Length: 139
Ligand SMILES: [Zn+2]
Image 1 (cartoon, rainbow, N blue to C red):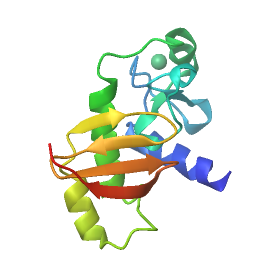
Image 2: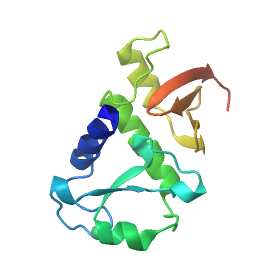
Image 3: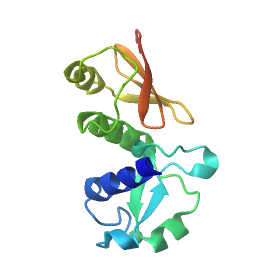
Image 4: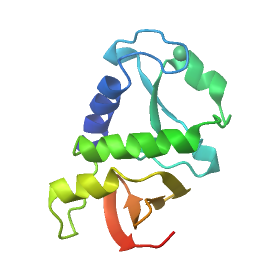
């Protein structure tokens, strides 16, 4: 519950305190959080999939899939790592190093309960806003 609240505050600031769809300025009490890639299709609650929305847009969007959902997920994943909202508590790695290698992510391989992001050298497995595994890859 506490985590959800923190998440909401972060998304509110990150998305510029306005509905990302219609641009309407929103008071914190007015916001709703939209699953950019629809929850009905397996879109997770992670920060990189949540978007600040007014209630109207959230209602009208329903299960539409925005064209840029993968690009947005990559962008927001990297930002959340950089902002230290997505960390890797179980992995022995300095924060600076984590930020550096996550900063090179350029692809979303899979989104779901566990989402997988890829750079040319690493894969990042993320669940509930936590990096649970980092592996070396060759692409
Ligand atoms: Zn709106």
